[in-house]
Image 1: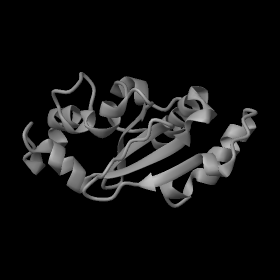
Image 2 (image 1 turned 90 degrees about the vertical axis):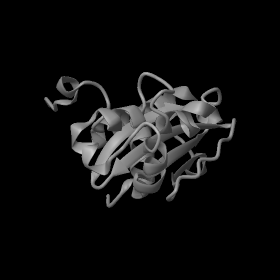
Image 3 (image 1 turned 90 degrees about the horizontal axis):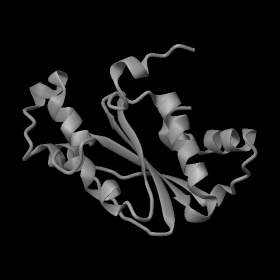
Image 4 (image 1 turned 180 degrees about the vertical axis):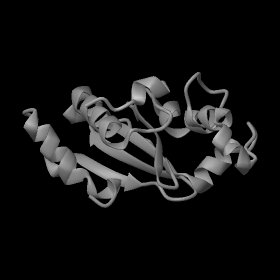
Length: 154
């Protein structure tokens, strides 16, 4: 697998391994480009990823009542207690980019790769949860959980 964009078949295979037969057209993997443009559709479930350089930073999910989580929370450090912007501002390794609460959102949109997985709502929240969990295991995002929780023990 070269990139997240090539992972659709793998995710469909994993779902099949747990007895879920999802048609290929019910899931899409979309690179949002730079700067990010993030549309929202109420008939989709989303699993989103953020990657900078060669490291995944965050993997999360949003549903039909989570438009702000999908489109804006991760770009505004004051939007919630857990978002990408806040994590970047608190990371000493990121200080070299001169990030501030005023510029971090635009910096993310211009410099961080965002790839979203859109899942038709008919697939259901369990499929969305499974895809998010699979990506957490495969990608080990830097800003998910506490460092001690991210240690691989298997």
